[in-house]
Image (cartoon, rainbow, N blue to C red; front, side, top):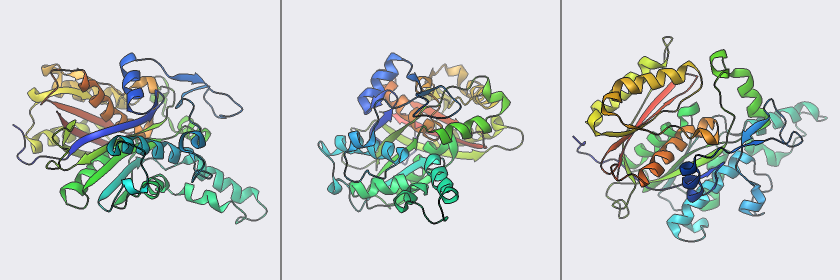
Length: 367
């Protein structure tokens, strides 16, 4: 049975991905299943990899204009562009500072912000004549919440502003944070998303931190940002919403691996929401490389295999989007449900497992 208290509703979404900029580009790319991996120009992209899934033609000044973008780094540019495209749909026009408001919040998931900006700034402290002879305009990019702050400043989002860092689970943790802001009455609407950039710094970090079990089936690195708009269940535009955020649960894996932690997490979400396996229409695993991915798949098959749900995998053709992975899972489920006549009223289970132990599960009731 459905829980008596309705959760917030996803009223819209947008994405900047290797499929292109905007919601329609993502939907078209997801339906085609085409690969987006390209050969990297070593003169522009130094690093251990030769291929990556990049947002095509993404030059910040060409996409966002020259105003306010002189010192903007890539991860901030991706986030600002995704928020821009979502607000264009909400305002039915060109969003500006007036498109936000005192009750519009923003929660953005990330890993470290921009690893490239952090490393570039740190390197300059060693290479310059004195450690403080650095470009001050680049310093804000080294702060983890730079992207969310820039989005708020550019579009006048004066509600709560938060950055959540939980690896691959960042998107679901951000969704949980946004849900709590609405249910506690601290915001009238919330923009929730997650962002990841491709850079030489990130490529080297991934190269050195991947375990032996991850190297064999690891996909090429990807980048992008996906953003949702959440409104209360009784908001005027909630009736035309895409899905209800029923519940989000999280946990931490122990020494025995992620399987038991994820099982407890999903079962707790089902129990607290009153959702039964028979109501589940689709499951979406994060599918990390290595043993964690095998464990995640095994948990979902054990819990929902009997009802034969639709599997909506993380869109592998856009690469390993790391911190943005769970957010892309959510929009992939929403995009898939658009073409499914049997999805209405059913539940999608979205899970995430990170190599550092974070696990999370979200239940969406599709409209």
